[in-house]
Image (cartoon, rainbow over all chains, first blue to last red; front, side, top):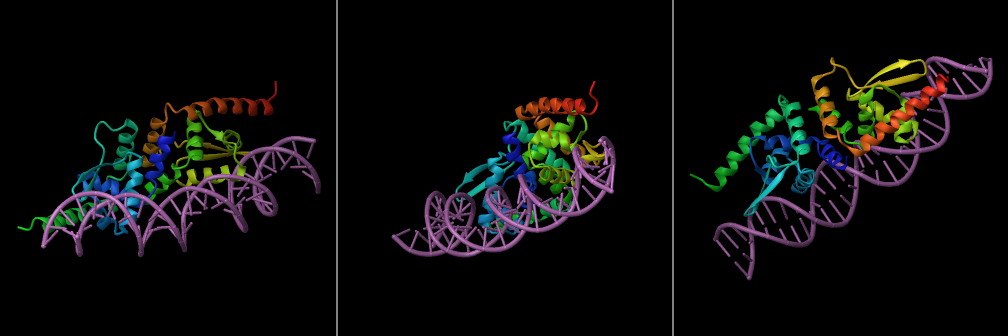
Length: 117
Length: 117
DNA sequence: ATAATATTTCGTTATATGGCGAACTATAGG
DNA sequence: CCTATAGTTCGCCATATAACGAAATATTAT
């Protein structure tokens, strides 16, 4: 029950849901998500740590960046089912669709900054 | 997104989850749930109204009593999937198991009060 | 009609939560 | 070494939420 409630509370916030859904197309670093949500870095960091504590996201550090991603197959069944529930429920959500487009642009522009052709 | 968040917030509270799971074995009146959760009537009423607004429960009035139940097949797909998620996630939960036993006793004793043999 | 029971609504209070900025840690680059 | 960048932690404030009791509503029983 405790684990379930940790997950349910983590999913009961629009910013965290948007962040989670944005990870469907692959990992993102924190600054990507900051730009997506248009919130203060400290706020986004807190949101991500709540998702992380619920095991709804995993992290990978690469130099200065910390990449967040959806958990893999070895994640607890409860976690996987929860993510499936969110993704299924919001597969056609308009906000999520807009975010997906915005994220593509954000990732592109960040790439452009680091490896200019 | 709004409907989803209404549901997610409704599910992010232990008392409401316990009430919802208690309805798996059939409808209950408010006083049953008050006795189960051991909270003030006004508190339980508020919890149930939150579940109701999220369409996670339906009601039926019978005399003095108002019976709450899980929604039927004509409930929105999103609602049904949400309930399935909760029930699946907590199918083996210890608190829920204890509650199921307690509810059986509560219902029995309420029946005994009204139709004494 | 009156009393008792079931439930809801309302007002209050304490705590939880989301938001921010400032300060801190860590890494990369000049 | 110094600066810039990425991220987290901490402290603060405003709002949201869960809890209660008192009062209101509705229905049944006396």
